[in-house]
Amino acid sequence: MLDLSVVIPVYNEEENLPPLWAELREVLQTLGLSFEVVFVDDGSRDRSAELIRSFREQDARVRLVRLKANAGETAATDAGFKAARGRWVVTMDADLQNDPHDIPAMLGHLEQWDAVTGWRVKRGEGDSVARRASSRIANRVRNALSEETIQDSGCTFRAFRRDCLRGLVLYRGFHRFIPTLLKMRGYRVLEVPVQNRPRRFGHSKYGVMNRVFVATADLLVVRWMKNRFLRYQVAEDLGGEPGRE
Image (cartoon, rainbow, N blue to C red; front, side):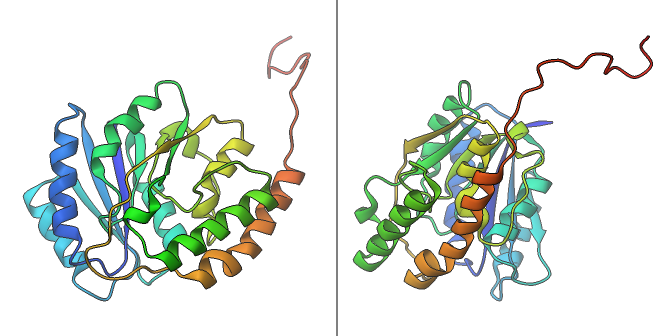
């Protein structure tokens, strides 16, 4: 087993990939850990997959998982989780807004926590007014309906102990609620400040509609799951071991 897997969903990010891989590789090589970077191409229509293959030719620590068709960020994240071989798993975006230099500190928290999720405290440094407003509204709605305290549920820059991900079942759109799903199962989740850099190339795949209105239906499902989740502890199991007299 490797020490670290970095999972990166990719959808039409050909301009961002070369600088992302160069910066990420430089940071990871300073950690003294064995690692792999799993790029999950979510049906891109540009040269993203071709570029990732070229990275792989130069460095065997690069992996490409290519989906047959665009299935969404949650599906790409799930495919990356299933492919990851590291005892620690980091997820991050491919748009250069997440800063790889935050990874060492996030991994350090995994000594005491099961999962770490990013909080883009200085959101204004990397996003437009409209995007900041829609994200703020979305977070308030999600926390109100889910009875959560996550400051930035839309941030997918996260780090996990691999054990957290075993048995984690995701549905379309549920990448936003991974911290909540883990907390439901008893895992300890810490939210930490991370950098949020301006997008240099391309455009965001999300807007007000899918940040607030579309996600609300998913949120109601998560709330139902929290209310119906089985919570119990076995006090005694007399004679429960097979074959024992």
